[in-house]
Length: 147
Image (cartoon, rainbow, N blue to C red; front, side, top):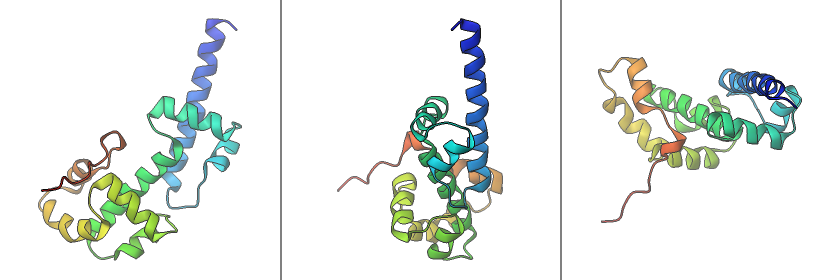
């Protein structure tokens, strides 16, 4: 394989990975699994996961959960939906898993976030509030320290 052929294959793979990422961004509330996403781009699930992680810094499932939690944060800031309603609205099927992942990424349980978030972002334009409160996997919330 020549360097040129390798570069062309890398560009094709990146285009396929972008399709997967765009599908996750668009359909995050739908049931999605890595195997189905991999089939859509003619890759094995393992290869897709490795390539996705290399390109975007996290596995496809982690990226999906980050998108779901990000959307949940926006819905909870609005304050008109309960935690259970938000859980199902963003595509999670288990309230326990949703609460655990939310707490891992955000640092507080969804009920606490719902109670406090509206006050914390009061007066900020929604685009700024979204950026400020966006969960970032590479900076996962640290466990609260004991007194």
